[in-house]
Length: 223
Image (cartoon, rainbow, N blue to C red; front, side, top):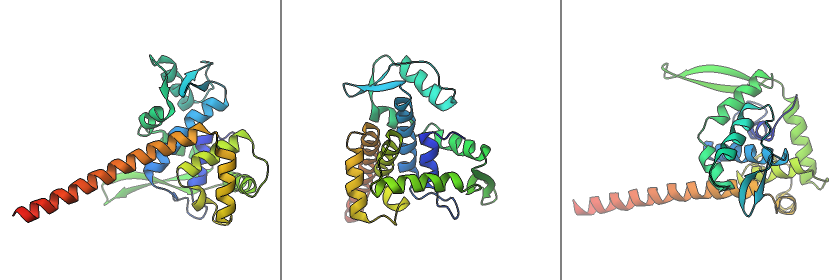
């Protein structure tokens, strides 16, 4: 069973007891988009050139989501910054497709429901906890000082950007975790791109909320 960075991120976000997500949809979708980009970089299909994503090898990897993204980047008229790709991909349905893939692999189990008896939706429970347990043990060891490889460092950088590391590894001392994350993720551009997009979205939400409150207050005082 070969898990991509996206698959590993999705497993890391799932609580083992019920497979519910530890983080919100915004953080998760940005993380998934960043993990797709990072997987292409680890596979030496793209690289960061002057702060922008450039294709260095257009040959497909055999994964539909990765190959589709690689084609999009190659077809783009000019190289774009990583955060532009993260922002553009975060609503393209990748998360749902990858969860369905994990269910098809036997790691998760899909369950169909209807909200209010009308609106269908799918949630997932943990069918085979071993891949998540092995992943968690590997990353926990890295956070506690074990040597890190490129995949582990990249995944931890994205998890940190999604504010997942604290929730996924509560057993690791906070000071130890923060120091180690800083050590191994300092040069990880995918994590920085994810963090920038999340911050931008949250700033926009806060600005809209503030404007609505001010507008409501002005309306009340004028009535």
